[in-house]
Length: 144
Image 1: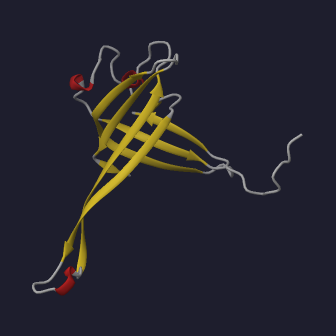
Image 2 (image 1 turned 90 degrees about the vertical axis):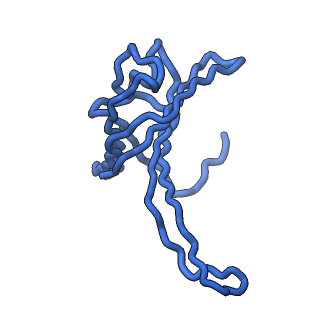
Image 3 (image 1 turned 135 degrees about the vertical axis):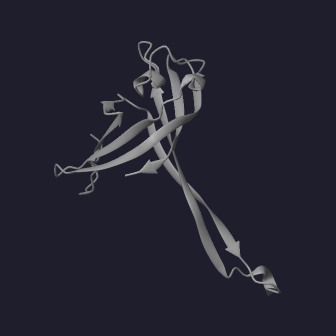
């Protein structure tokens, strides 16, 4: 029998991801990313190019979701769009995506990514596997 580590560290969490109030289902990846441009200010005749101040710009947030396609349910349909939608070019309406983190003590932390619009879609069919994976990236208007 292998040795069991003697530690009190545990990872206990659960997430629920919803699109417009409905559970999305089992995801392989949920990856919210925030980026913002910064402007580096330098003075005239500044020797060595030393930065005097960094001025932050606006923040852009996106979310990438990956899902194994099961029983013909596409990720686009799991996000609540009509099953007739085959590609993001047919999508006009934004959705809200809700991330609910369930803590071991029974409390929850919720973030709502509002007015999300798909900007990228891909499907991966790999040789030697039975899985078809879809990936959708959405651009987020605001977070509350």
